[in-house]
Image 1: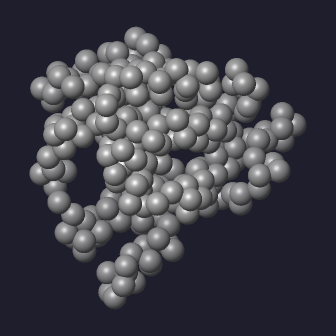
Image 2: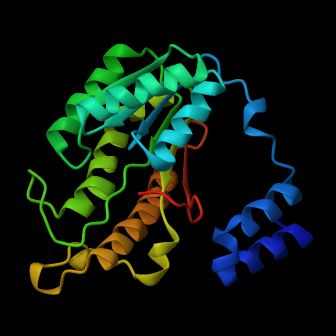
Length: 242
């Protein structure tokens, strides 16, 4: 970004609060002349969205389906995930919306879900890491990893690794990580990425996970040819979700 739009964008980002509200969205949409979302034709594209049963993930899945994409919703609760996929099909009239059941914090389930996606789809264009978790109390995944880090850092890393070749086959594939401005409150420290029971704070743990997500996104981008797979991290803005 350069010139006046770049300066305005940088100012919004520096002030933080306006950047993440409707103000930031409306200003950028006008400056960069963003196309209306309904104007895109994603027919033939296959998109995987984790955490798609409600909130931001559900909204993304519905918009992608409305634009004609084949959408794979990933959620940990079978009944809710199947219901969400059915609701998206009904709302959009797009029959190509399916459900894959997996807790992305459970590495065995991530492996099984990735294998199912590869087996069911001969192409994959986009992988959206949207599943989120902010726990007030500390818990651990089945792999013994603190749950926030397991579901938002380790699980997504493993899924990206397992699906990378399929994404690259339709070059350029795309991996989008839904992070958060909450990361600005934490510096990344790999030695203390998982908070201990004695100093656990759910909000801080969430911020550390979001910081790690963005850093991993940068490292993936450095190591993978962008003509093969593009890596992007984003903040969706403040949204009134669960």
